[in-house]
Length: 282
Image (tube, rainbow, N blue to C red):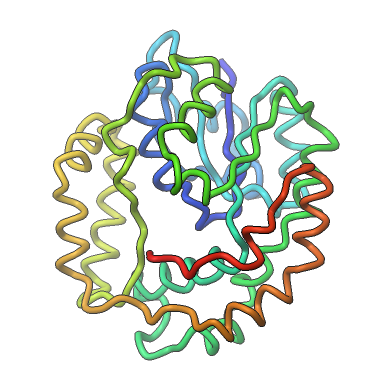
């Protein structure tokens, strides 16, 4: 059986939280959050049978899906269409300034960059922080191939403001019970920060990947819902990353302004909240 829905976000757009919530729904099955099949030539070379084997733990009648980093891949839209032209797409977007800062926080938390590196320094050394915030061309590649009935573009801020309504819209789009309330609905993840031990973070992430490969998703949900994972990450966090300054925010918003306007035109939505939003709390 083919995969029924795919999230094609740019990353750092609330996809970890979304994956947790979707994965709890009894009518949905997301064994892996990130597979990166359609944007990775090596994985693609393993064939559709390998891809669909990632969902071998799904029960009969469940909709199968994943959330991978496909948005900016030039090849992924066509590959997904050729795989399943009727697939439903979730496209989560976030204020590109906040997304860039979240990427910085995430790499601090993973120990991928020095704890002393400022956001300004990281922007110079990590061009993907900025590049992944230009959405217009990437969106067009998908919207030119897939119908409006097949695509749901979500905005991160709306999920923060109204998580119940946000997830209900997604459940309605996927045509599953919209009244289901995930226990993880108000449990946000991937908040970043400077870890006391990067090795501990790497170990926990590696253990999670291994548990998914072994088909232990139910055990993972139990552990997450218990709060144990969040408690360990909190205890391992030495400090939060310094917040983005108003000056940095204004400068970076200017970089994205033309693209934001183009996205507004494509989606026919008002994204003025991306221009002068409050400084995010986490």
